[in-house]
Image (tube, rainbow over all chains, first blue to last red; front, top):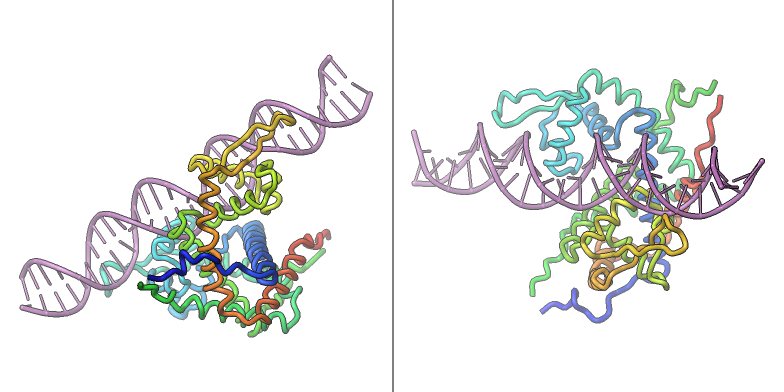
Length: 164
Length: 164
DNA sequence: CTCTCTTGGTTGACACATCATCCATCCTGC
DNA sequence: GCAGGATGGATGATGTGTCAACCAAGAGAG
């Protein structure tokens, strides 16, 4: 029997950890809402729209299978499906049939989507710079990257299976 | 006329910045979904529920005005209102009238909410530890805190008004 | 005392994310 | 060639967040 879950004394965070954690959560929440709001106001795109469009423009073929897109962006397939439906309705992307696989579909960026992302990108980068990078030293940027990578690595490691 | 928005050459991110930024975004997204999923599975609470309940238990009086709660948690008042309605329907919190101000209401945690947060907290902390702090050195924890604080400071500073 | 302004809070419409389920097509073994 | 599973993707219900508009009660100014 494993008693991690029912242990008498949980390993609470110490003061430094507590502070770092609260700051991180608050920062992350505020930052994403600010980025989203400014992107929306300036370019009429959500962060999700932006990510999809950027990803599509990075492509040579200009089109991508739906689930492949989902894997690359690390989205759930149902999220992808719903979101692409909304984006298609707004004319930012288009579905194309897949000759080789009757089930599948390609997603391609439309000229309108192209125009939207080209207009949005410089402004968004400017926002990111103003809200984040202008405030950080290059050591801090490196540290942020290292911490992020380390946590990603940890997340990739599935939780140790606690069989008892 | 101000030409930040229409400048010929946007200040794109350099490679280091680009990498740090992408890692940060990915980490942040993955981490919040993982934390949310585990909390939901173990304790049947969302992160939002958790934040509200923790905040309410930290209080002496055990009750708080709604907008004050919103300010402290840094939520929009409409979000707070919607969320409290859902939590009340599940019996986690209760509304109490405010004698002094006919418009207002107090929010109090219910015994059921108390039980929920007491059961959830140790498990959630354990999850945070496993996914984040176990992976980081104490220098990295300090760096994460410092970077978060710095960005929060930057966010607090309203964008320089670009009147032209 | 009333007219306005502000404050505390709700509401409805909509975008977004997740889960579970479903459906069609492809693939594989026989 | 066909039964059964895997894959690509859509769908609906529900919970969550935002915006804008609204409403009721307090607070001042005259």
